[in-house]
Amino acid sequence: MANERILIVDDGRENREFIHEYILEPNGYQTLLARDGQEGLEMALIEQPDLMLLDLQMPRMDGIQVLQNLAGRGMDIPVILMTFHGSEDIAVEVYRLGVRDYVKKPFTVEEMLAAIERSLSEARLRREKEALTERILDANRELRERVQELNVLYSVGKRVTGTLNVDEILPSIVDAATDITHAESGYIYLTQGSSLICRAVKRHTDQQARPVKLEAKDPIASQVIQSGKPLTLTPEQLANHNGPYSVAYAPLLFNDQVTGVLGVSNISRDTHVFTKHDRALLSALTDYAAIAIENSRNFEELRRAKEHETAQIRGSFERLVPPSVVDRILNNPESLELGGRRQEISILFADIRGYTAWSENEPPERVVEMLNDYLSLAAEIILAWDGTLDKFFGDGLMAIFNAPEEQDDHVHRAADAALALLRAAKEMHERRGDNLSYSVGVNVGEAVVGYIGTDRAMNYTAIGDSVNLAKRLQEYGSPGQILVEEAVIQRLGNLAQYRPLGELKVKGRKQGAFAYELLGLRPIV
Image (cartoon, rainbow, N blue to C red):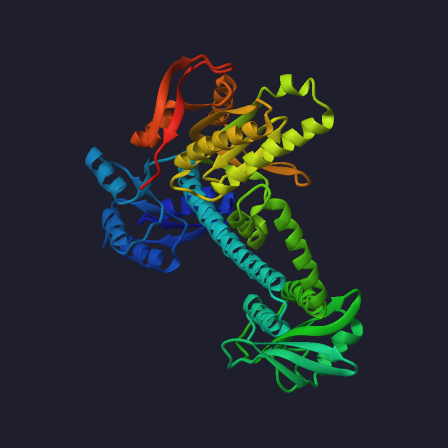
């Protein structure tokens, strides 16, 4: 990098001229000359050169004094010290004072040029780092502005989808427009026949926009409606208009028809002049405004459709999960997203024992009737204990507790539901005379819980070793038996009545499980 300014501070004229004529000038450097230390210090403070070539022994002020004065003033100018003689003590002192290099006189062109390049390389890297830092800061500032704009647009979008009252939405859109474009004033006009009606306005003296219904006379807005294109006008273009300093307008389009205009303006001469980017932001906001207006016009139809849809969803979901969970999903449909989170749950697996042998001699209609009766019975019990039905598989089912709603007593709920299931199955068996019962497995542990599948077909389920172990416990259980893992007994404590069964070798699992048969359970006081 040439054209850097180098200050030569030396009381020897021949040395100054030699450096200038044979080293600096041929290599494209600018030369500053000082005849002694005092003059060199003054020039350094005024000119702030990129590099100083500083003689050690000079009249009025020697090289060390110059360095001390520069350090005292907080000046960080790279320095190469030139001297006929020196010592280790001098070298240590000058390097502490900021000297980058040390050249002994007499020196060759190559020696001095190499020292200059070494010293300037460091300064160049520092300047490049500072320039890069500044660019990064500028980029971060711009990124923050873009993020703020996106947050504003996102907030308006949520407002539009969550509110059908135009008198609430339009002022919020005007507030958003003035916020992201740094405008003093904003307004929304809607067409009504041949008239232009102002429906929301924020003047430069207002804190927030407010709804209004006033006929407006705005020739620029009328021009935008006729052209159907956004428009910005600079102070020069508005010179003949009495009023605004800078304006930006964007048409409200719905089904390719202009239904209104969103505009912002600045009056003060020291304010922001609107750009194409501001115009694009207004166009994004007008999309929300057009949607809000159309939503309002179709409010009754949408309300009826939503009520019908909600009733259908509720009717389907309440067969699988408690009503509180259905309410949460209906109030927050965004929660229905693919993915899961790790959490502790209690898992219950139940399977109808004796089903295969019994169904061999029964007609299909009676088999289906039996399955419906037993699985409906199980589902009712799970939901009554505020569990979540995960799935049915053949003649069995899986349920989880503590998800999606948290339950402090989920282990007790799962165990109590298992006992209730066996009691109900026994009553049904005695009533039907089919000699069928359930085997049940219950476990507690961490699992990944959430919506698994695709965007078109998903299932709320739990996955993990604790789930697999609960299924294996159920498979080991006999008809009318509830098998639980040791962790369940530890969590239930003295509330549980149980019988130890010893360690079970679990299929597909290296580590065994210590199993217990759950016999009874006292309520939580």
